[in-house]
Structure formats: structure tokens, C-alpha cells
Length: 319
Ligand SMILES: Cc1cc2nc3c(=O)[nH]c(=O)nc-3n(C[C@H](O)[C@H](O)[C@H](O)COP(=O)(O)O)c2cc1C
Image 1 (tube, rainbow, N blue to C red):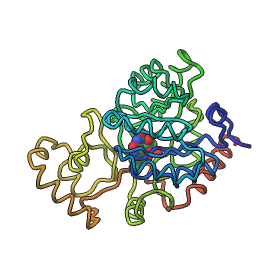
Image 2 (tube, rainbow, N blue to C red):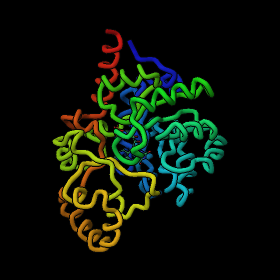
Image 3 (cartoon, protein in one colour):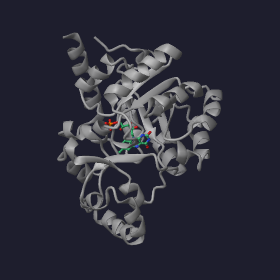
Image 4 (cartoon, protein in one colour):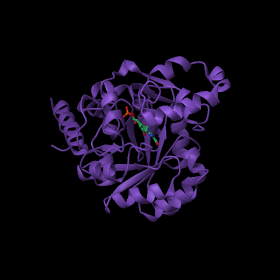
């Protein structure tokens, strides 16, 4: 029996599973593969490279996909929004920053707006902004977010808020969902579906090197940490309130919690990082993945991952 939810109805998809728009990892091929398997793929608009984005839309070969942007970065490259809208995406997802200045433009283009939030207060503001889908992201999640809340409590909090204030808005759970158990749990918490990052990062279609994937799947959830160190060293200008979950290594252990000392030694650390990047030295270079990496033991085609997640969740919920 298929898992029909308000999300599957809204998007006209088979499984309530969205691919997270992971910067530099969720390209057109992966997004198209998730859509072809019955979920919905979202390209990761990342940090603002128009040529890259055009190419990745081309890679989908016309399949139905959405696109996600890092809101504070889109503010410096607003032309990317026009580029994306011209491709008629199934949804535009905005995360990390104030979405209000883009919401009207997206609404006028008749494209459903998805907003990712990390706190209940942000969820309230997302409703005010007119989000049709709210992604409630807990701190277990891979990549950027906040340490503020965990998926297990944030999702039902947001579900209750939405039920009270805007019952037609759909809620999607993000953070820690890597298999059928996670999907079943998210639906039991009242979510209409899930947004999956880490598990699909470890898929054959992801724009990730096999070496990085193999290194990551040897790690467990305990090996991940939320930190600002990596963005400082990569010179990504993230607002102070956000950090990123990633696999810890020598670089992270040396500097985690010592941001001001790191800033004082930044030039030499950045130059060492750039050398390590070329050499793919995993004592320095690391992978942005979530606690769910401990549940990932192999790199598989996205279609297998999506279909197995849906069928395992169906079995669990029917038991
Ligand atoms: C490698 C990686 C990159 C990410 N990049 C983005 C991004 O560019 N924009 C965004 O909205 N979320 C990004 N995220 C967060 C996801 O949207 C999502 O919330 C998260 O992956 C869900 O948790 P999970 O990793 O446990 O599945 C990223 C996550 C990962 C793992």
C-alpha cells in the first residue's frame, strides 16, 4: 500500500520523500533519480554559481524537480532566483536567513514556497511569510542548521502550530531520517513527509567523490559534531547563528570551541586547508553529514534508497 500523505497529494508524487537541496552534492542527476523513483528531487542551489545551476537543470533532462537556496547567499546573487523560476521548478525551498524579500516573487511566479526552519519561532515566521511547506530541521541533520532543537520534538511542535494556525500548510521532517524507521517515525510525529540529506549524499548519483563517501560511511553518528570551524577555514561567510554538522577530524578537534584563536591564525590555517583540499587529506578536509551517517553502510543508487525507505516504512506502519 502506498504511503499517501498531504505531501504526496500536493506534489503528485508516490512517496513522501524529498531530496535535500545539498550544496555541491544534490545535482540534477541525483534530483532526477529521486523523482524517477517516486520522491521529489531538489537541486542544491548552493553558493551562487549560475553556470553550475544551468548545467544541473539541464542534467535533469526535463524531469520534475525543485531547487533550494541558501537564503543569505541568494541575497547576494538574486539573479539565481530568476534563473531557477525560468526552469519552472516544482518548488523553491529557502533555508537559513530571512526569506521575506523573495517570497512575493516566488508567489507571483506561482511556484510553491518551501521554508526550512530550526525553531518554533522561525516556523511562526514561515507561516507569516506564506510557506506552503515547512521543513522542520532538527540538530541531528547533516550540513548547516542550528544546535537549537532536535527533530523528535521540533516536528510535533511545528505540526501542532500548523494545525492551529494554517491547517493547509504541510510539514516535512528533516534531520536523522535515513531509513524506513525514520520515515515511519516522522509520519507518526505528524509530519507529511521527510527531507533526506545524509542518506542520499551517500548515493551513486550524488556529486561526491567515492573516497569521501567511503570515508564517511566508516564513521558513526558519535563521530559527528556541530561546529563553525569548517566554515571559518573554508571562508564561507555564514551568519553567526548557524553552524554545520560534519565528521570530526584533526582540524576540527584542534579548533572546535576556539573560534577567536582560530580567527587569529586564519591565514596559515586557510592556506594549509587549501593544500589539503588538493591532496584530499581527510585529517583536514571533512564531510558535512549528519548523525544518520551511522545508519549508512553502503553507497547505492538513489532509487534503491528511496524505494526501500518507503516500503520499510509502509511495513512498519502496517504492523
Ligand atoms: C552535505 C550537505 C549539504 C547541505 N546543504 C544544504 C543546502 O545547501 N541548503 C539547505 O537548505 N540545506 C542543506 N543541507 C541540509 C539539508 O537540507 C537537510 O536539512 C539535512 O540534510 C537533513 O538531515 P540529514 O542529513 O540527517 O538527512 C545540507 C545537508 C548536507 C548533508
